[in-house]
Image (tube, rainbow, N blue to C red; front, side, top):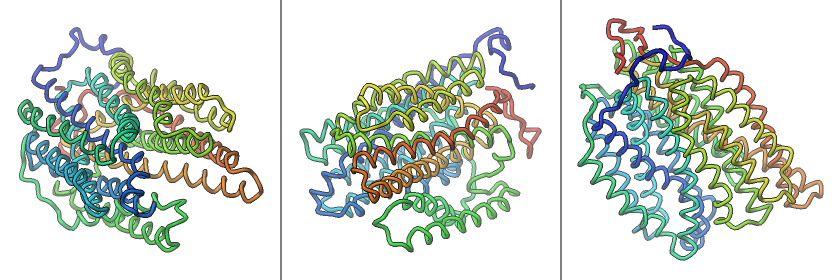
Length: 495
């Protein structure tokens, strides 16, 4: 079937519909993903209170975030195999069970190591939920509706991380840091109970073999790479730690890729890399990686500037960045509908240019005297551009591979989020810190030096983003039916 960006209405006399039972299944997964992703960022604002309460160092406290990211990077590659071995309900029960257990342990923790253990268990559950949601959407939603549903997925991805710090800030104004977990616990239990009672099994269980040597290779490769990226710019880390983590991560990734290529011949790969044989998937993933770097870098750099240079308290910072995140989330379904009717280019290229304009705006207009309304306007502008970008990239990427590779494709997208997010954070923080330190050494006051460092970081993000714009011009709508190049007789049917 020839691919086209023509309106879907011209291709089909009747608009596709989603079965009510399937709609319930997708809604359950979306709401559950919202809860677990909300928790991922809620911890960031609570770190200062935890440091004071537990009497630990800042570097040790950062492991509550770093450990979470590392666990996500390690578990996500295994989710493709899990979704083959377990039914949808079993996979969901495992994910939410781990998340609830981790939240309970964190809420009841009496020391740092118990709290860290709770965060790691939480992360294991979170790592399973998102790929499960993405694969289920691809299994159930007909091509003509995928843009709309992926818009709802983007709403979850955009709103939940933004609401996390705001919710945490409100809680910490009056309550102990444990209530960040105590408040989430009954909500997670409620979703787990309701979800298991309403969720339907939509996958076919197969006796997939787990290649055990691939598991530690994936853990060292993806986990080591994320950890190495998180160390960039960390002056408190020993000098040997970054090169060691980088060497181990890269070596393990190379070994992992080589092993998967061998295992693919018998369909036993832990993470099937044949997704990259589909050029549209690869191009979409590259644009997504650059977009994730820009977004994660911005959402870490901007709050730092607002707090350390402009002197805003954490709650006000959360309120300043909240409108943009809510806008990005609320526009997700609208962007999805436009994609279903008009295709990707009408959204992706203009959205990319809007993001570039916002990054350039931060790089040129940010100062210690910048009015708060201007910061808010630039952040909303950037969020508007991302709103037109992410739903399109999710839909195109997963729609570009055959049905048999949906599990590996969704795991690849989720892994990319962790690695690209860590890379973007490292890029922005390193540039900001190094430029700020150089200016302070030359006699520039701290607040002005910090803002100047942030401007250089945003300029670097804008330069990298230009490559994303060029790649975005090559993204098109995938075929409704993607032929499996290894099993052409088993084409993925148009649902």
